Structures are given as C-alpha cells and as structure tokens.
Image (cartoon, rainbow, N blue to C red; front, side, top):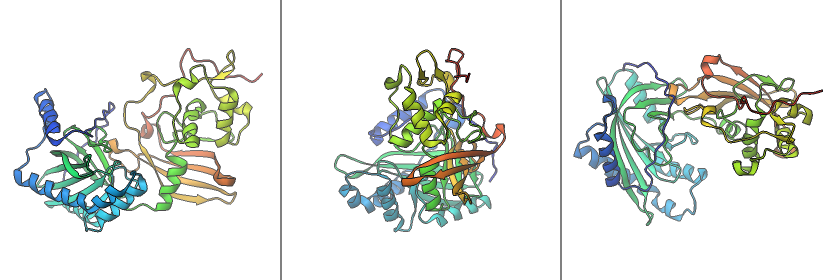
Length: 401
C-alpha cells in the first residue's frame, strides 16, 4: 500500500458524543455534511448488511462483560483490564482506548498489518474498551489501494444495558505499522469521537505488540505525571550541576499534581506562591538548596512570592503533544536508575519522535528526585512542543548579590 507524506496538524479539536443516541449522532453528522467541507472529509456509505453485522456482533461482544459491568461500582484501570481479559477470552483482538493495557490476541492485528504491507486485500476487527467501560469496534478493510474503517460505538444506558450510540464508515489516507508494533493511521472524517477516544484531529496510534508491565509502571510513576505538555523537564538537557534550563514555575504545577494527585486551583495563587510552599515542593523532587531554586525561578522580590499564572493562548502550543513510553532502564552503580524513554507522537505517525534518558535517585519510603535528563534529539525533532513561561512584563529573576 502506498504511504503518503505525513502532515503535522497544529490546530487540534476534541469532540465527544457521550449521552447522544445513534439517531442524534446521525442528525449531527448530516448537518456537518451540509457544510462546505474538503473532499477528503466525506464519510463513506455503509450497506445495510455492514450495519447489521457490526451492530449484532458489537452488542454480542459487549454482553460478554455485561454481568461484570453491572456489578462494578466504578470503572478504573484495573476494571478495564479485567474487561479486556473477558472480551479477549472470546478470541478477538481487544485493548483499551489509551494504550495503557497490552492488547489480547495481537497476532490477529499484526497479521492484518503484514498482509496490508504485502499489498494483499484483507480485513480485521479490533475492540477497544473506553475509559467509562464502553466499547468501540473498529472494522478495518483493505481493498486494492483503498483502506477504510467502520467504527461502531457501544455505550451503557441507565439500565446498564449495551446499546449502539454511534456508527460510521470512513476512509484512511495514511497508514503505518511501525517497528515497535504501533498501528498508526489518519482517518479522513473528523466526526464525533466517542467518549474516551481522542482521535487527535483524525490521527490515531494503537499499540499492537505488548510492552513490559515493569516499563509501564516506571513510566506511570516517574514520567507520565510530568509529560511534555507546558513544561520542559524532558525537553532539554540538564543535570544537578546546572538546572538553569529547567522552568521551575511550570514544574511547580506538575510537581503539585505528582504529589497530591490533583491539579492546582488557579484562584489559590492569584497573588503568587509563598516561598516555603514553592521551594519546599521543588526541593522534594530535586536535590538542591533554596537559594538555587530562587536563582533559577521567576520570583517577585517586591511581593516576595514566586510567579504563577494560568497560561494564556500565546503561551500554549495548539497541538497534541507526544506521549512518553519507557522502553528500557539501567541500574547505575551509584544507586540511581536511568529510564530510556521514547516519545510516541501520533500526529507524526511515529513511535519514536525522539528519545531521552531520565536519571532518578530513589529515596526512602518510595520518594525520589530527578537527577538529569539527556535528550537524544535535534531541535527539529521536538519543535514545536513547549513555549517557556516568560513574559516581557514578568518579574525578573532573583539575582544573587
């Protein structure tokens, strides 16, 4: 199959269809079709037979875990993992909507991808469990030089019964099965994305091959809470001897979430952040002194507070940032560990936009500090992801006398 030039979309939208019936969704789609849209954004027609098969098989699959869903008081990652196992036991390919859980029966999708690469006409079906316990069925079809997908969404109603709330067929314009086992594609029609499924303005990346649970846990604990959005901890080279490149005022927000499990309330810091609060949190995750924190952060000497404000539109990058994935680690002789991290960038259809190595020092009672970050990438690999939190009217940096 011919592979097309990748396009990086800078403006990204997110829509959802939770709570809408199938008829309501179809009405919305018809209204969208009536507007002036690009030729490649026209959805494909579906036959009644296609609709029947997708509807019946999707509901049959959802009923496999109906009893489990009805007995669960809440749906968390562990419950989604159990649902994936139940569905996978039926012999179908299934995973979650966020690539947090290894796919069951991945050989079915891997065989399909290899047949596509060989130029063969072929089909495959993949189920994805969404964050609310719903389900999305994807029916891939490769015929000659054309690739299409039928997307069928199953949600649970107030009686905790499965029902079809969304169905659509669309064309795929870009297709890639990566060396690490990611299925990346760009869909043609930007429609209503089902709850828990962000299509990144038409781009999608699904991990087919399994990833070590150990690597997943390391990423979840040390890397994911920080990530690449609105901070540069993993987007620049630094070490304990030189932290000048790290934007501490951005990291305060990330570290706050890492420590408490919830995000900052902007109204709590309208007047800035008290030194003890700011410095204490930064020093929790870096082995540095208070003087070093103040030297490298935005600090208002008049108010004697650290600057913090909600980012304006001029300070944000309007695209979906990459997602980190720990792929290996090294235990160093000094007791630290170095995590090898690849950046999965769906919008570039790549499972490794760049690599960086994060060294961490483990502390007692599960604590840790960041020691260094070594970026194995060029500026082109990581641009544009981050805009520093610095304004012309921002308070100047504290200067040592």
